[in-house]
Image (cartoon, rainbow, N blue to C red):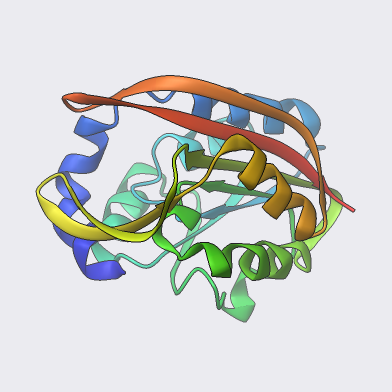
Amino acid sequence: MSEPFDEIAGRYDEAATDREGQLAAGRWLLDELPRPGRVLDLGCGSGLPTARQLTDGGIEVVGVDTSARMLELARRNVPEAEFHQADLRTLPDAVGTVDAVAAFFALLMLPRAQWRDTLAALRTRLQGPKLLVLGMVEGDLDDVPIEFLGVPVRVSAASAAGLSETVTAAGYSVRALHRQEVALGDTTEFQLFVYATAD
């Protein structure tokens, strides 16, 4: 999974300019988390906007991504945070426990069959308020090859109902789900944002 995003890294933030849904989910975390709080930014990319937003809000952030190039940008953009290169499904022990997980478009890169187990594994790292914010693209795709910013990738997507069912099956209670139309380069898409707590 890392190679496509190593190539995309320098252009991703320029293409993904409409981040209001993601920023709103970050604001929810900032409102809900005690200080000091610790958040895992899963699939952190360049660290923008989430790691930067949470760090500015007084939260300790540990980011994980598969792309070495994305992590170079993240360390530059958010030097106060801690970052690890790892597969999103097998996190290093150094990640430790966290009060919340932010996973914006990370599951997009996995087949649907792996979503529930990945979310369930994340639940075992949660302590305190045990919060989850999850961003996904709305659609009906399962490990389908597409071209993203000129680079071949494989992606998955789900309906709002399907995503809610997966989150619930992984041991979370969905507190809210928001649907938003966003611009991505020359196209638009619908994105889903789930706010949840671990049971």
